Image (cartoon, rainbow, N blue to C red; front, side, top):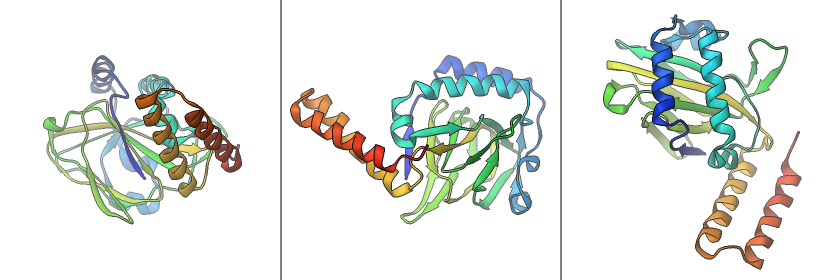
Length: 226
């Protein structure tokens, strides 16, 4: 499942992020991946415990907490603090798969990576190449979104970032552990919830939409692991 979530950040918030990131200290992106990832990763990142990154990450997490589409699609139990990366001058990240479990920086906790998110902070017109390419059972999907928009996709998908051959691409990225660990169940619940919201938008609340909402929540109770 891939979901485009528009305008997670406002234009003002994107500007604030970019201004802070332009003044930050960047390091080699290989520092945050395992042995396999290090072979194909060539970019720069903010250090995981960077004060700038943590401050901007809190802004993003606050925005996500208000975003109903993200909640409906991810059903988040916990989300790792966002990290930040930057590509230019031919930098890229070859085909890889995200690790199944990640330590939460600054804590003793671990998180199962059910869903990956990329939040774009550069406009598509500002760089050439740099598409996020995700491979799933339906084929290859290239993603290059407006600044402030986010793409949510399964962490179990093979993916890559194409070489940035001009300009500069800056993004936030992070992982979410869902309350519903089974991807098929999450997809069914997301489709169910989207249909209920569409019916409510057209016809308002009715006995039928209330009943459907009840079925949705009973399935959510059945499949939730907390």
